[in-house]
Length: 206
Ligand code: FE
Ligand code: FE
Ligand code: FE
Image 1 (cartoon, rainbow, N blue to C red):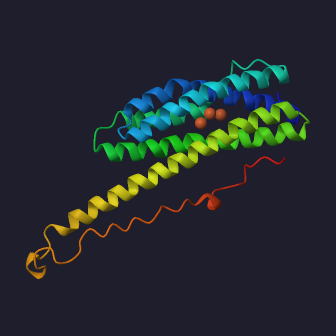
Image 2 (cartoon, rainbow, N blue to C red):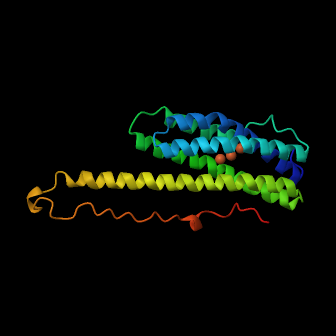
Image 3 (tube, rainbow, N blue to C red):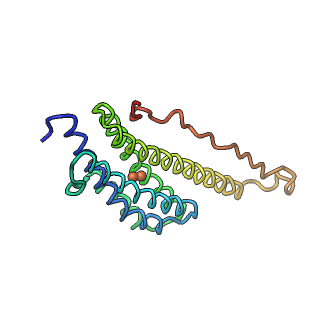
């Protein structure tokens, strides 16, 4: 029963605990399915963080006087299932990687929403230690999300390069006097990270 903000906080924290434990099982599979070494590493690194996040939630539950286990986060179940769907697909490794990044970012956004609101509730309730623990994880989830965005941008740039090369073949060769034109201009603008445009709605108030 939800009778107070404290009830909402404890139930949401237990939901997050379920989410994290599901991810501890899912992330090794995601790492295995990824092709790009950087993406594999991102998943492996976040797996280690995720294990610590589960431990943090156990501490949070202890502070709140509730048991962490016993709830199932259905949203994470669905998100993990979507990840499994991608892993079952065959196809171009870079396309699979792109789809894995998308699935992973959906997971991070769910977590960011959950930790953001829970940290805010804990602060309102004067549970300073709880809020601090939740914010620690919140920051890790945000960093992971940003890293995944950077990896996605890298994939998109690679793809664009490949498409440029593809366009060249089949063009009228006679107009181009054997490579006089400078072809590989490599205009690699440093991918601007649009951090500022990302939603800040879930940021916990201090
Ligand atoms: Fe997490
Ligand atoms: Fe949930
Ligand atoms: Fe995460």
